[in-house]
Length: 186
Image 1 (tube, one colour):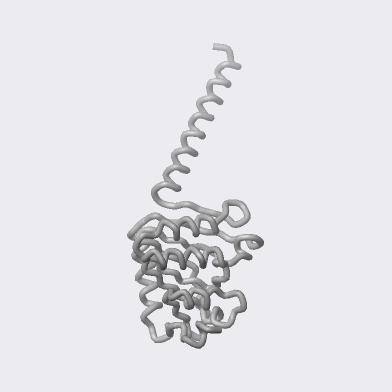
Image 2: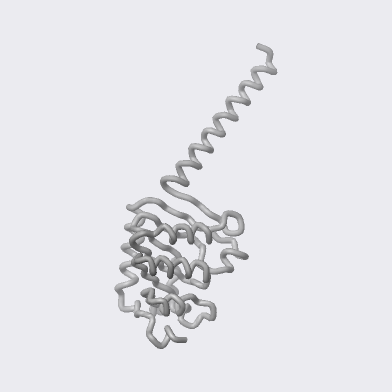
């Protein structure tokens, strides 16, 4: 076999192996364990809304900044269709101009605000005790339109349980007061 044909066969086999590895990894990561989204490239906002829309039983959200009205509307829609929804936010969200805390509370969604003197800087949600949404992505329009952010979707009940245990800790501690009626009407 001429040297040129050997090189072409070698390159062809290499290409087939690379494609097989990419397809194998991509299919595995997005269908069973993990999916990764980067803002301004992969549309994490759509992934969040899609996950919220698929929720059947429960949604637990711990979010530092929550100003995105489209995501808030998906949360309210889930609540209205009977999904148990709990939202825990940093204390900055009580008075932040575009915070969705008031809108959520006015719609009946249980919202608690951290009164811890430190920042509640978590950014995660647990969907139906099986899916975790986490990463640097705050649920804001700036994250969707301007910032460089990331969202990791983890499809593992064991990991979801670890996040839910942390959420439960936040929700039940003394520094977790419910959003007051006064704030709901602001």
